[in-house]
Amino acid sequence: MENTHTRNVTIDILRIIGLFLVIAAHCEFPEWFYELREFDVVTLVAVSGMSFYTSSGRSNESYGSYVKKRFLRLVLPVWEFLVLFFVFFRLLGRSFTTWQMLESFALLSGGILFIWVYRIFFINALLNPLLKKLAEKYDFIVCCGILIGGLLANQLMYQFVSLVLPGTAGKLFDYIVVYTLGYALISWVGMLWEKEGKRERIILLVIAAAALVLSIVARGFRPFSEFKYPPQLYYVSYGLLVTFGLYLLLSKIQIPESARQSITWLSVNTMRIYMWHIFLYYLLDTVSPDLMKNPWLTYAVLLGGGVIGAWIQGKLLGLIKKR
Image (cartoon, rainbow, N blue to C red):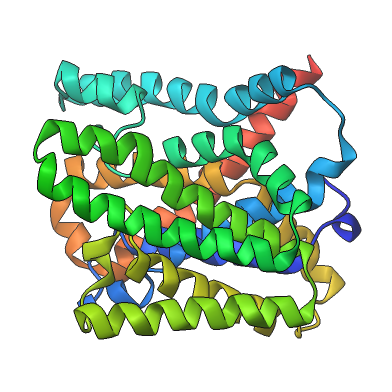
């Protein structure tokens, strides 16, 4: 277990909130709740940028070594999970197409549900060293200009390409450019948040609020989920506004020392819990789909089972390593 005194507990709590809400999105809660919690993925990506900025300064490893570690930590475990996942459900009598399995291993949206987020985190991990250099190279005003320009450019590119490149070509452009730039900017603004002081953080909060207001003026109130795939300004600005607001609120709360170890464990094991929840979601859908009509029961199984599964997995891996 990591030393809890060296960690930013606010970042850990934000990561946990993001995880809990992402899992809740996969239960049949009312639509108003589904839209209200639509900041969760933005929070997780922004937090990854915050965490990278605060932790990467302790290492002088080469970029090649860094990429290898990110692959082993973010991609390889997912591939191992997918092998076991497809074998298990094949034995259970549920089959998946070859194309669906290939897209799952490629971490694309056409694969099994919910697996695509790992692609976002891995690509962002590859870009984070460059993003951190940019954050450190330029002063805050220039960084704000880059952030605003990047968000607007990404929005305009998406709208333009949607008109001139419909179909497969447009989707490919979205995957390569719009998704990448959109989530990279979210990670980068997380780094800026950690780099700067109170005044600059308020400015970032105001930028997010202004972007949301402008988006509402331009489009009216619309479901945030309509602007999530790929991440567009309306969706991103809402996510950043809530994330920054929660950060300021949570940073004022004194967390008891007795709770910090549990918070750290949940934060460190976020992605492992997420994988377990995918497995449990498909298991429920296969053996008892009627059960999933009860959102609270489904949520208890997905979240509670995910935490228990991650804890057991950690204990088993610990025993294996000792041998």
